[in-house]
Image (cartoon, rainbow, N blue to C red):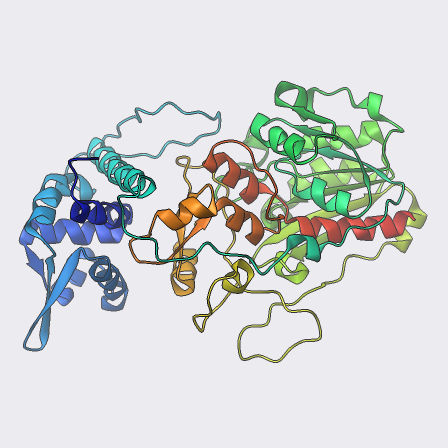
Length: 491
């Protein structure tokens, strides 16, 4: 790093971010090839609407990668320096993603997860991503060494307290057993609702470590011992009143390619086997809303509600995180089953405790769900909104520290002036690594709070693993509301 000038360091982060975005990468490739471009002609070449292209040109200009020169009524775009043009000319064959190469090149990075899904990339595209990763890594190293741009944001102090969304209830005498526990969204919610934690079973050791770190007194089975499919559940009969869990959602989510029962991660048969063996008074099971769609109706009937309906009266719920004070747009489908008919007859689904009210709209009689900026304690910029759904980083094309799940989500974060890529492990490190566009960089505690976890919940593992636990979890305040409703029925 000692041979790198400060000017070059300030260019690395925005260039890496630009090359990681397909449209901006193509714009830079054209500018490197032709030396300049007019927006109208560039839009035609790239097959984009002028309005869509304008957004990217503005970003590149603000990031200092391009400049705009007015020629009469026309605006010509140029790269900001000759050095940048020389660098991009070297990268441009790979940056365009085009050419005659159609064969895919294998990744040189070994997968660390059995369900990792490598991207289909040509050799040129892989080289572009490698260069992008190198540039980003250099910028990050420089920032952490104090050689990057000066921090422009204070370390934020959140206004939202997740514990306030789930006031701790007195013990109610009910014992809860947790399956597919993950980072502890359901476990935390049920414990705050007054249920005694009996045990957690979780296959991922890092997630099990999170639970054990958060509650050293809990009995947590992780790794091979936490494999729900291998447990003799008859030993747990008469030991618990409530069994809860969220079998992996990837087999039914769009991001997981919706292979359903063909996906080896399908944990529903193991969950149903556990319920039938343990015979709790009630069970709670959650998943992505797609599982409740017509596409999987036969699967749900044959695998879940059919077998369990022989012994349980089952209610299906569709819940929204923002209705329980969580500053995020997130829906989950929940099945609640009662073994005794009198408990089922008394059951009342959880009612919303909060409401999201956009600026300018009248209140609705419930406490207001905070927007992202207000929840995180960021300055008022005249705009706030709920966070888009936070993605899991544990599966998909590659492990990442970005919480984005769509282009639409990226637009919302841009309006919020929050940078959702390259999430840092701590707030101090997030402050040190200045985003190229000057937006606020998120940290793991910030993302956890947007999911409804307490600020100090001790997620374990690498940063991407911690974010994966957060993205896979049920928002604890939502779990708390469900647990409270089940406890009331069983009282």
